[in-house]
Amino acid sequence: MSIGPTEGVTYGVTSGAQSTATTTGFGDQQVFLELMVAQMRYQDPLNPTDSSEFMAQTAQFTALEKMQAVADQTAMLLSAQLSFGASSMIGQTVRWYDDAGAEQSGTVQGTTYLSTGPVLSVDGHEVPITDVISVGSAPTITPPPPSGSTGTTTA
Image 1 (tube, rainbow, N blue to C red):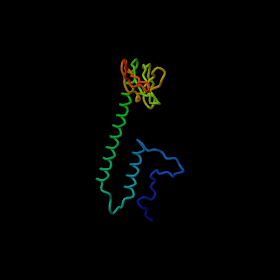
Image 2 (image 1 turned 90 degrees about the vertical axis):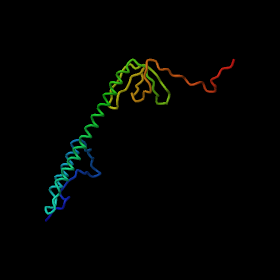
Image 3 (image 1 turned 135 degrees about the horizontal axis):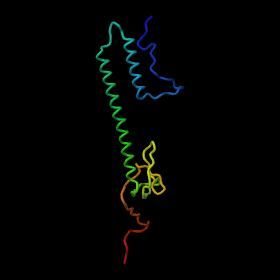
Image 4 (image 1 turned 120 degrees about the vertical axis):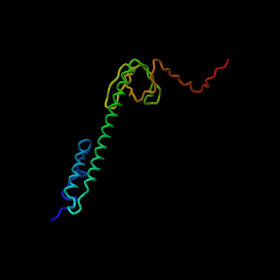
């Protein structure tokens, strides 16, 4: 009895009724190594796989791993930069658009650091730092002219 190239090999696929686990970090490495070992174990002895292919696959996997590490470090750097930027806004006047689309302004009293990013405490309002449109010691908001007014005066 002979075993085919995919018989007896489990690839970590679950049925729709079971929960699926995300493979990130170590899980991706483990799956890659399991597939590589399965390829080596079930290869045709009369036509073995070229070792340069395995080396190329390993090099590609290592490069992908390093790129992921750089992406993770960049994300951490961005998070730290946002946090430091938020703390430097304390005491500053900021402007933002509220949920209704109206422009608001106020003085930043403090910051809170959430998993979604820094949130500024501005005169009793919680304002995500990504909603801030300007920062300054005294930005001014020019209110729109009253409706029905042309903005000109007559003498």
